[in-house]
Image 1 (cartoon, one colour):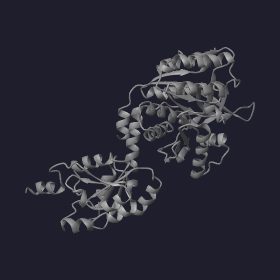
Image 2 (image 1 turned 90 degrees about the horizontal axis):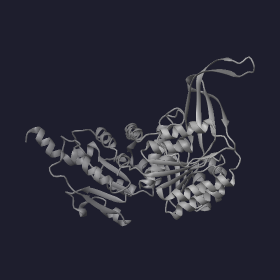
Image 3 (image 1 turned 180 degrees about the vertical axis):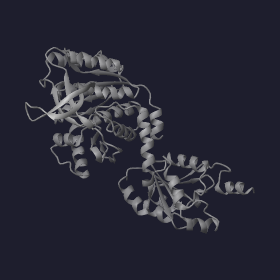
Length: 483
């Protein structure tokens, strides 16, 4: 199932978010002079905007994905707390588990924005003192009473006082006892705080702070992520790397590097919230973790193209997936040598190979290739060059030149890479890339499939997909000629 299909199949689940919520207040205006009181710019306010920040932003992102969301957090007994609660309710987020603390103020981040949406400065309102024992006990009591209602728990830790080692450990323990996954957006450099969770998501700065290890290269990031995995006994660590994508390490020893799918960066505020939000949506819907991460990756791409914290909708992700695939399809056309290098970085993926002339592409080709793509993770299509087609089909062929045939194949979402070969068969390419599966249409006998000896020598297999009768380039040409 591709990402669009998975997004279409998302069902409404119950998600619990626990963490530091805050109000993001934006003052927009113009600045054309310096204050006579001090050498600072004067901002003339034109408008004001308030949006949800921190764990509240995680909540609204999950809500925009059409999920039921409740939040356990702390607000002050003040006007800002009332405003924050009002915005949450307006977005249909369950606020019944919010805790009011008369000794704290609601966290507010005030941003001042000048011309061209340039942020001039920010000031914050918050109290970083530890929460009282009474608040601590109330948090755990609320969780124990309500945990059975939820499908997944997101812990959004901004290190603002709500979450400490003691209560975070209890949250994870309670969730585990109820067979509920916990996803944690970490902040505090403390292994004990996040032990036994399902997934931990640090950025590079947080990964360095918690492990005290260098994170300058892909190799160093992998080593540090594995150290975090080992010391917390969690199942997965997902290190977000900004423009360089993400690195996922798992407790079974597997590592995956996911490239960034961001096309335009306008504001990175809340990008991490978007990632963990859509991870929760995907995993609670039983989407495989690598696909859930890819969906989160695309969601973050949408989010950073907007001003300020932004709640991303599923339809926006679907459009973004289609747009990115449309602009990047030419990158799918590769040489055999390039393909070898690419596959070396994806050695944990199941590679499927098929080949053909694909002269006058028709629905039979499309249906066959879609079916072939479901056999593994990566579908590679080998295409006969023009000279090769002439030798096999005659001087009047191909009808469509090789570059156009390859471009058409690369434009298909379910095709991963397209590679040309000059020989009459793809034997040499198969020998170089060593796919897990070779597949052909149903008019082939397994014993006659080129490369069968190669793929079976290392435990691979040949798969014959059902053939669609009467759908062939030859028949189309005959029909055009009136034969």
